Length: 628
Image 1 (cartoon, helix red, strand yellow):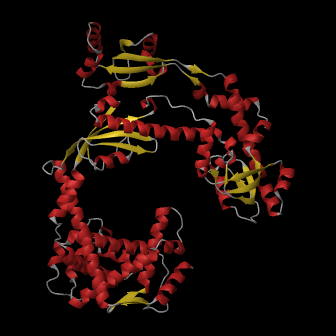
Image 2: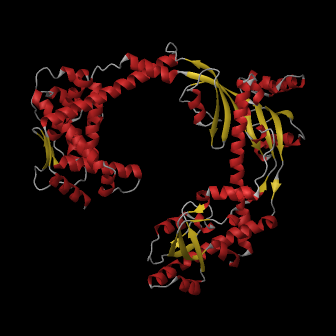
Image 3: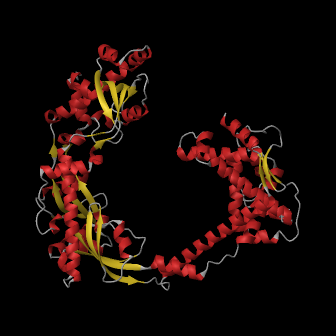
């Protein structure tokens, strides 16, 4: 191992902080293994190109390139698709990498200024803790160490220097942020807030809560709702697309399918069309016939089957066979299937020994004959044949389009169907063909002047399309969506009626009526702020934590109206195991956050004091080379 400068009294402290530094070490190793391999980056305008400095500590261009490429590689793995430098820069990755290098340089410069370093013994101990450098016996292997670094294109001296600086930085920031104690008042306040629970009751209103039935909207009310909410009934901007299509659903009926294929398809799906009679059965096995017979005698004398199961040390789940056919029961099949109603038979043989069988239900068999299944089978086979026929035409259609064929030419030559659709992403009234994601993707990418291309759909169909024009947003005529507008008008009227009814209930309870007399009461046990409610929106919980016991409040959310009463407030209890766990978690989180902020502030301060200089021309050169 190469030698390094040694500072007195610095070996013992790192040993005490070994666990805290192990993460730093592993980050460094991961960077080397993931970032150094296969780069092909030697220098940028010189072997010692720098992108800047902090104080007297220089930041190497190769370090910037290596870390930026490492981040791009990690993003590529995360997204499962290639990520370009431009993509990474649009996400701010280059700025994050640069900030990290500046921060590390600031700490390195400060460590050098105050003479902080660690000795060879500490570096050796850290190397010995890295399992990537271990041999078969689990200890540090000099050969494995050298080979790993060689494979990743770095030298031992460089690796050890980086490791030494990492540990020194950890010591420096640890000295600043170590031993942080969260202020007790802050911890207590957060624990009281997070640990407090509240119990409350709800009367959730629906249409049955109204004292008089809700009348259907009149035509005038429907028109008024349409006019007042015209934005809700306006179709968004759309692309008017002309397309030529070959679809299995249109070609299918023309396809001839031999009878033997229909019969073969039926046989292949026989299990779907012929469902045998089954029984729901439980099987209680005994070691021998005598024990099984004795159990049956107890049963005949009035014993419960469940008690016999418990005597065997089993549960009903243990003996449940589910739904079984006669053949699956083997020798016991005839006796079990002879029962015309639920009951117990046995002892009967089984693969595990003599057993009592309890039959719990009869599942009648179902059979769909070939003739009954023929339309379904024929349609599926015709669709498959149509998809094959379309596939046979893809190359010819591609060639025709490459030769400048228009959509009308495709219709004339290949029998494709011409149609036009106004496609707006997410519009509820898009044509059926837009259910295909391949069609939607192509339509959304389609631009003015684009030439038609052959596009394969998920069902084996094929389309070619071109943009006719952009259709501006426009209201959908009322007569085309009368049912939709009527339903919306009624929903609005119902919401108003329920709101008025809830307000009347609140007034009644405030005037002395009982809460329980207002409707079906749902009582919620004491709940903390973080626990979601299955039957109510988050607004209910938010309101409950703003009220005092006995307070009433009407909660109105889309599709939800309720009268809420707060029943109880239970302060956080830190004497319980759960309370202590919450308190410890909050305290540790606060201390970690404060320590992180202190370390970041310290790093920023020493960097500013030392002076930060960045050479944008070198940074741009690195980005240019990485982008090629």
